[in-house]
Length: 617
Image (cartoon, rainbow, N blue to C red):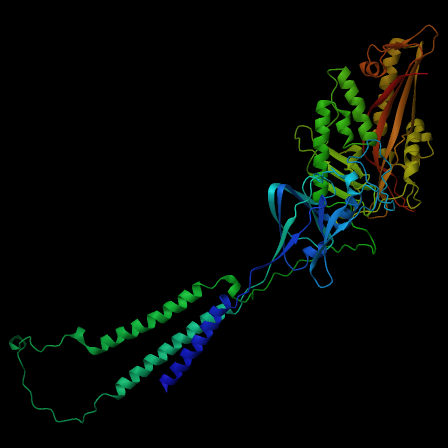
């Protein structure tokens, strides 16, 4: 019976081990699936839709081969379509039966110039305009490299391979340089789960059953051998006498080491060793994907629940995008500052931020020891508050700490992108004080809505804020807006008063009785920018002009600029009988509470700099 069970065990072991090995060899499927995309090279851009990328689960490995440069970028599908709206491009989408199909999409808006004009401040995107008859040719030559719309981009000559894991609402752009045809050889590869979780248990289990079968087989042999031994009856033993061992010849003496049972134990050991060796070898050959994944995962820790309002648009940028945009702005402005090049600065600055730079370049060109304006720090970006929108213009607020230990500063900026083809440009730049407490803001992946300039949901509409603060500067406590502002913690108002006193004292030293100086503040020409906070208030950036006019009170007197080289450099004269008007530009950031709140309007940060000087009319 032991032999029967041994044979059964051998059969079961063979089936189990064979099945396990078969799962890891002949029955194991491929480790990846691939799709090839071939285009006719008729367009400069190829857009692979998110549905194509998500055709199979898992990360997507994209390989693009071209004859020259290969450029790949990914971003939101709607943003990518907006960027391609003025050019013909090849769209790769999924067909009705799941296959891939390519088609050429013609322009839907009038082609734009390859670079936005410096004075373009309208920011609108004509999504209803008719396509120009020239089509892609008129928009040709626009390089996709470095666009602020891309979440990330890659560039390499000849061929490029990149592993991505993009959601369904993102797409991939493939191009060469924006002029040459896009690379036509594209391959998408997805990993396929070909794990065999029962191969390991089958092989190891088969080895165990094989070992059991061997044990049964050995026990069966032992039983048979014992049953075949002769059985003798007992006989009376003869009387024996002692034999002298010394006289006994060595012949016929049987040593202990030559007994048969010892030989039997050695054979059984030699039989068992191959079984253990086979099991160990099979066990060692099983990788992790040959076993069931039974380990319990850690329980997720609770996190703060963020409720996104229904129908809200996605944020304009991600945190990584904002960091890259700030770095580019910082680098470009640093180059412009070094070369005193206003044209370069204009590619990344606009509004009051650009105006103060232009004035500084003029002064530095005329006055060798005139210091440059503070640099825009590149990193780290501490706070990112993007506008939630799917149209243009788009706004992003950032707070960046300087990494300069000798002069640590915290810079707050409002950045705006006018249209899909332009880059983000900083329009307002200010410094936050160390004691400034920002209101609670939405998470970067949620974003904030932009508050209209005439909003009635705040204690003061954004388009009224600059004029109200100018009245505060002009009239102090007599201003009708005095009670609406937190003047006790306002650091700008005393700084303005100190400047007024300094300018008055300087004029009185040389012209007392023959000249006078007057001060006035007014709202600047730049429109305010406001982004909502979580408490339904808003952070509002405004522009205020401060002007002082020095003029003689005696017909025979003149105003000289011996001690004012800055005004002299801006006006081109060193004296005037009519006097001079000097204007400073203030970029001011406020927190404005919601309507019905008893909290005052708080100053968050500011930047004040000389803007212009001219001879009084």
